[in-house]
Length: 316
Image (tube, rainbow, N blue to C red; front, side, top):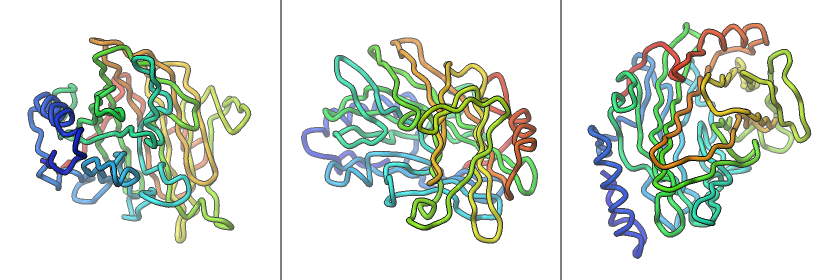
């Protein structure tokens, strides 16, 4: 377990209480077991959960949690700390506008004292998921140290074939008081940021594939998309990352894409006490530059009503 003593003086008691509450809810919480950060396909690393105890003196490094993603051939494909728009990191979930008790918190940038803090690991069965899922408890904490939203985020990976991996992400959000989740599609929702090299001046840019019927709006925003894919022009062989919106998520969904390597989609929702919000997303990482027909085929294959996809994976 990460020590509360490392946190900022004045927030210790509040955060310690929050940590105890979160860990009590997670029957198998054991943050000392750092190997549990890794999500595997067989014995191969597919994703790594990145988190540090929050430190107000190191906000950029410690105010966010995310997952690094890897391609089936072992190449890392996501950005971490640093780089252009450094707050975008790997596979992440946040809202630019999280309104609560008359104040609005920015969990996208986390630059006003907000933070997303790792609170422990949970038993997948608590979310009705199989043990192939890695489940983490995350508190979305305001500048005063209060958890505005409590999240349990689940991820698993599986192989569709030797060149194609699927990642199922399930998020459950809870609040003790009414909370409004919103924000424009460039600064909220479940999104992915590719390697920092695509944002470098004069460097290669990513490209996108969208379904027939997708509607374009100003500022590279999109609607009427059940899925969207981004192709990373990597040396040797490109990699395609496909995001599929699962049935049952709040609607309408608004999408965002940027050629420096970020894309995803968002929604607005009023989170009420006693009424948790559960959303699901399928992400596919495939070797090669996939066309629209193949993306549509994969999207249909990984769509499921319960928002957890299908397939198996190992978590250690």
